[in-house]
Image (cartoon, rainbow over all chains, first blue to last red; front, side, top):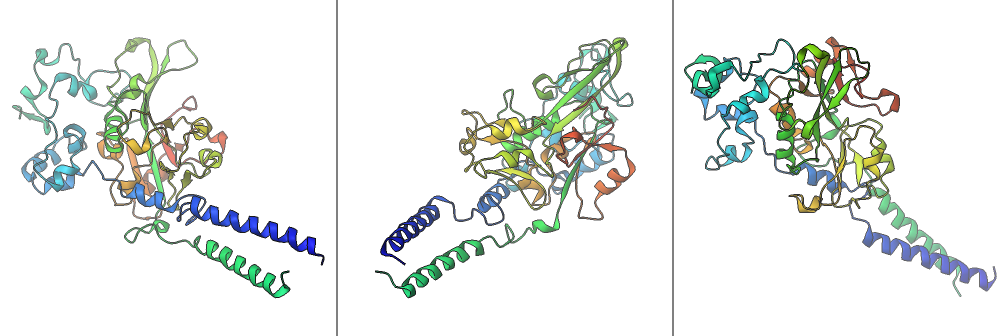
Length: 150
Length: 254
């Protein structure tokens, strides 16, 4: 082997080592932990705080409302569908989300007559039904076929 | 002058470093409490039940810090209307269905109409992952496609690669600072499902049109839904193998 060959080889090896050193600084440590992505990213996404809890958690404190609701026609409607995200409320009851919108328009989001809705879904003519009164004057929103409002 | 022994020593050192790098790729669990190899998720949308109230769109936005103004959606609802005497359907989605759907055609003029909720299909062969130049989007072991907001360079390639339009660029005035200018999409609420909770849209749906389940759990209700209904996926011709299954949609729904 001549001297020049070794010199060229040294240049190549130095370049390769330099590349590896720079790479170790630039590429995040967990990149490639599972596949060609940053492993920490999965953990970061998993650790995001939830906003919505679940109706079963609501039961722990609001058992009376829960019983009325779970026996009625609105039992498929989760508490948070109307009351809004309440995970923080379940952790610290002092944090209370904004009041429920009890306007006719809000109830109409589901129950206004619309030809695109399934025919067997209860829909009403917003113009004539209830003479413009708030829905909750007659219907209990937790169990709509219990009359007399909230 | 370098001796052969020195050269071999250097080579040995180099290969040791390489071995150290490859040792990092061994598959460990993301966290102690969750084993992602024991789960494989799936989503069923029953279009025959959807009433187009938009509660899912709202719940998703509140859960995932999606800007509340239009037109940023991780999930949205479309309305399909076939008018009498017309071949092609009319499709609309006013503000993604966030404020419901106003009646636009008289019932007598309509041949057929229904709502179709849309979200990321979490494809088994995701084109968005394939095109990402930096490895910022990837498929997890439990079958969810995620975006690394710290690594995304905002090149938008994945947004145009998605055949379902499920991705959007998080705006520069969005509420979550670390996500600004990066691609964002539905994660099936990965932070919730890994804790045993349901995705926010499933939680919020008042009629049970959205169902979420674990295919690796034999007792999950998702098996019953998939076995007892005629199901289809969106754009099967794309070969993306979606994991969101639809009940009761026509081939015009894409």
